[in-house]
Image (tube, rainbow, N blue to C red):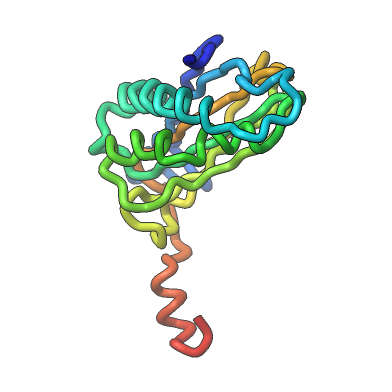
Length: 195
């Protein structure tokens, strides 16, 4: 049993100017997505999702991680990261969640970029052309707000009702002119009784 992948989609954007001001360092964001047939489509309610999770998640994690590292250049340069899944309208949100909320999927990416933070995520239901929104955070520091980013793109013909889109995102850099501080400064300002 292996995933029936219809296609891979790659996305890259580079922000040079933000707020009318030149970025001191361009923000680069990358996304990769696999469009695959939902293995539970047409089967009604399936109680045990584990056989497909165990068969599909490592394959998807490896294929998507390899592709995003090629786009970014290496795991070492990746700073922000995240994941997402969109299930087609004939599927359950649980089907989207099943393929990305397993260490068999996420650990492949985490290890490749030497991350400490958890992978932020979205899992939703949608149709062809719906927004694929992938929230990101810094791979080594969950409180670094400069890397609270969202990569958004769409695929005109996916997901079909019986498909799932599984995606990863990466950033090189954070928001170009971040100036809201980080979580640790908030905690310090609030003091021990308000945090």
